[in-house]
Amino acid sequence: GIQVEQSPPDLILQEGANSTLRCNFSDSVNNLQWFHQNPWGQLINLFYIPSGTKQNGRLSATTVATERYSLLYISSSQTTDSGVYFCGFRGGADGLTFGKGTHLIIQP
Amino acid sequence: GAVVSQHPSWVICKSGTSVKIECRSLDFQATTMFWYRQFPKQSLMLMATSNEGSKATYEQGVEKDKFLINHASLTLSTLTVTSAHPEDSSFYICSARVWGGDTDTQYFGPGTRLTVL
Image (cartoon, each protein chain N blue to C red):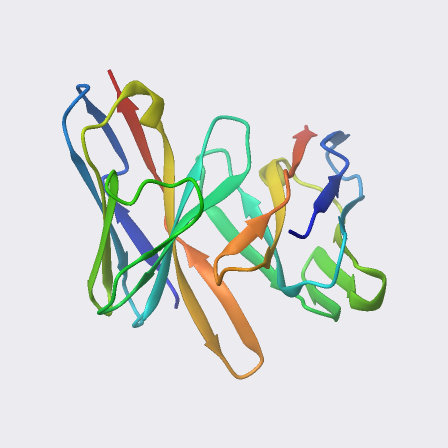
């Protein structure tokens, strides 16, 4: 199956800092999405981004499908941004295959 | 829009008992729902695909007789963990697929934390 690598695995930043999270894939993927799992476990949809660039407030995402990677940018971090960020894609099944996640801690 | 609920949010049960978890799409119809399991500090793993009106499709290594899935309506899928054991303790999350136009995404429920004593 397709392998996905998320980096960095852990990230600790001060409030106000910017960050870039990355997903690399071993092959072309479909339906790439980014999610934020908050400390209570709820997954929140951030972007559906099979290709190109999208922005939503302080967050933006870019997927370069031909080079098999996707980036999530977080600017001016807030403590509420803390949690785990996952990229997910549709693999062999219709369900999603997830990376191992980036655990982000924003300190006040 | 695209809100998915789960019930219960947490459950503690004794070993050997069965537990039913409900997943509902509140403001849309979902012909396809999914069930995932997440162990502490790990990623989500797809367990099964639930299609309304048909049998669920289970991922390799998931026991279909242990994890019974029913998708009897366009807004409700249920997961029953039968004869639960401590190793079944986990965070169970459902999602509903929404597609059309230029999107094909999934919206997730808040999860159910199962603890088997």
